[in-house]
Amino acid sequence: MPVEMKPPKFFIRRAQAVFALCAGLLLVPAARAQQPAQTGESRFLFIFDTSADMKKRMPAVQTEVNQLLATSLNGQLRASDSIGVWTFDQNLRTGQFPLQHWMPEDAVTIASDINKFVGKQRYANGTRFDALQPLLNEVIKGSERLTVLIFSDGEDQIQWTPFNAGINQVVQQRLAEQKKTKQPFVLVLRTQLGQYVGCTVNFPPGMVNVPEFPPLPAPVQTPPPAPPPEPVVNPPPPTGPPLIIIGTKVETNWPPAPAPAPTLPANPVPVTPTNIIPVVPAVPTTPVAPPPTNPAPEIQTNAAPAPVVNPAMPANPAPATPAKLAPVPPPKPVAASPENSGAARKGAFTIGALLVAAGALAALAFFRGRRTDRGSLISRAMRKD
Image (cartoon, rainbow, N blue to C red):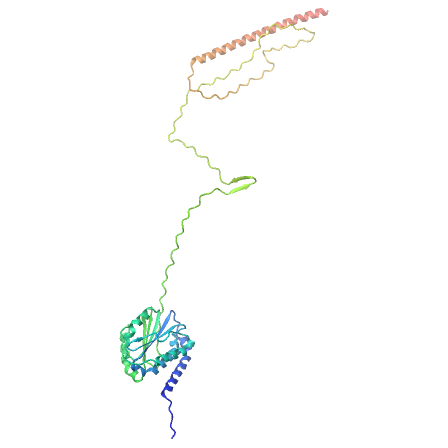
């Protein structure tokens, strides 16, 4: 009888992993369309339990890693998100796997590298979750958004999250079943701004449920700083108006300065008039011709006698124009005496008497001249006869 050759279990497990990874890659576009885009920086941390009991569950762990990365964690992984890998049993081991930056086109390569690293680990000892707490708390505080995926056998209890009671209760209920089927527990924790915001406990085989992040709080808008005060600048000293040049003259449009107003004393002293000497108008005098002396006898001719003009009286006397008197500066106040006024009157009478005497002498000389002329005319006529 021909013996049927059965393929080794190693090849069967490899074929299952490759099939799961290819199926997951076909689901990537649908997962991206269903999940809304996240904002903010995101970090992902894969933690693998390497206790002795996890060695039997390692093929199931690798299959789950392929499915998660093939779907970009149901669209939660975005380009350039970081992926770190830790291992633990009784102690925590970090830094053995290089940090990865997620790119969807590199999903197969990243999943293969993680599975190779997990398959080479030494599985021994038991599980102790407290080994994760110190360093994990520091990473949570320093991350804006962090997603932690812990692959374990569930043989220990977690005591450092706000979801401790619910996690431990669900794990205890499914502990026997998961051990029988050689499937791991996948615990997903999410933190934002240093605080836990979500948790799920998952039981492969099947899709792992990743809780959504709550929206980030709106950034606090600080008011813009107040503008610095403007520097105080002293105004420049006033300068004269601009020059206006017209022809050869240089002028300015500066208006003439107003004349200063006269200052009046607070209490003006009344001015008391003093005794002013009255001004006596000058009396016009007529010049008097002196009496004729013994004139030489004139030679009479038969010509008509010339009219005799009184030399004392002008033919057409011009009206006398009163002389303009220059203003006399006010002398020192002196009271006028009655004696001065009497002397002025005596001088006026004397001048009047002289004028009368001069007039009489002029009349006498006139009449004497007329008598002499008559006698000479008669004698001339007798001689001619």
